[in-house]
Amino acid sequence: MEKNNKYLVSYLEYLKYQKNYSDYTILSYKNDIEEFFEYISREALNFKDIEYSDLRFYLMYLKEEKNDNNSSIDRKLSALRGFYKYLANEGVVKTNVFSLVNGPKKEKKLPRYFEYNELEELFNVPDTETALGQRDLLLLELLYATGVRVGELTNIKVKDIDLSSKSILILGKGNKERIVTYGDYCEEILKRYLNEGYILLNTLNSEYLFLNKNGGCLTERGVRYILDQIIKQTSINKNISPHMIRHSFATHLLNEGCELTTVQKLLGHESIKATQIYTHVTTDRLREVYYNSFPRAKKDD
Image (cartoon, rainbow, N blue to C red):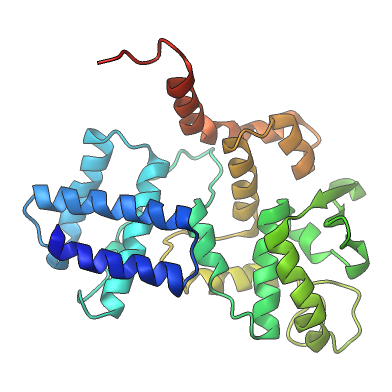
């Protein structure tokens, strides 16, 4: 464990000082990787010589001994995939064996979403020293900050944005309008993009917020292409779509205690039934609150 620990410390410093990850995300990575070290120590395995067959047994351990749900297992695999990518780049291991492993399949009807640490990894990809990089980061931040649909995103015009109230007028399904709000992270890149990148890209004097490299309005297909290129530069082994970021927006709001009816309005759903598909993802949060709050949930030892 001590021998492995120096690589973990080095990796966590890399996440903090080079990737600018939050303390919360770094702690999550640390816990997940340390748990893996404990497992391989128990199994008398060398972390440098891990093979695909070893990972199959590790997945069984998480599922059967730890009783982890699919979401937790996905998160742990994501943390280890990033760690081993770092080790491979540093020449500590020959290959990133975790790139060969897919997480457990989720139930078919459940929406797919990103964990917090995965979103941070996505946000760290665009080069904000370039006009296109500023646009791409704004695209990510705005999708996550507002939960808008991709068609709603590409239809945003600069005049629809109220910078003073940090809100945007959105034209949704059935030409119904709604107001969405964005936060500080989105505000920062929005202002920078409008003052720098947008001016450079807007060679055709367009009224739309998101522009392609030729100055025209960015299409829905263009957004999906950009997202595909971004995720290729991460350790995340998931497909990506604008709707998946919308799912993440709704999921994370509910996990933090937001009321379902509020999420419904933020998403622009006409019926509460459409929003109820997200309630499954709050099971972990509900269980945590129950065990921490209900007086007869746990017995004192």
